Length: 259
Image 1 (cartoon, rainbow, N blue to C red):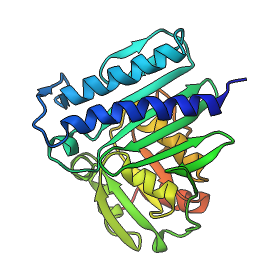
Image 2: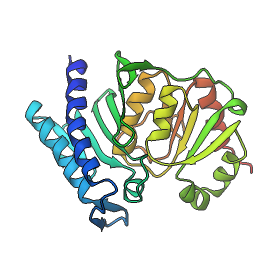
Image 3: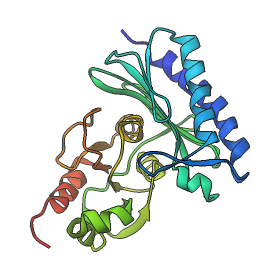
Image 4: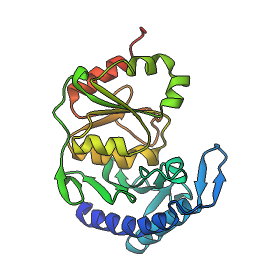
């Protein structure tokens, strides 16, 4: 049996150290490069990931690590997954809504996740059978079951409006309250019960797998747009919702063939 409590303590420790690295560069003109996919990366992304990798390697020297900046070491199904700065564009522009993600998954799916918000001094945790927390205090999702009453985040709206125009048009005309967002924080707000749903787009496994562990530990649901469990092979379109009823209504709206 995997000791998730021990792994969670390790995850908190290594991300706390990496958070110091990120904050030392925040609003301090970090060097910016452009990757092959045209996404930006800074020295902070690379240094923070290396700190996390080094910390995990000390505790679990034989285990596989998969990170955004340095790829995958090892070939095991069970692995640690790192996004050192989730929201590099926010980081570059001085917006404090970038996060730091660390997760652990097995063949049974995501087992634990950390969403650390360095500039906000908030850290969200979630693990199978251990519940979810924010700064150590238990959190849970809302009881919202109807889209008409929902506080909805639409992430990656610039991409959605161009590449999924019909879906975007339906989303901006639904829910009780809508906000355009990005990255991990809206999902953390669902886990905390402050928002009810997030529709997201064009994500990578290191973006959604750590986050899904937190959302689900808080009692919520996070799947792809067809309702399938998230895996390393998911297509990057995700749906987070506080309740199964809300999730189903949003999924029907997204996949509607009208509008």
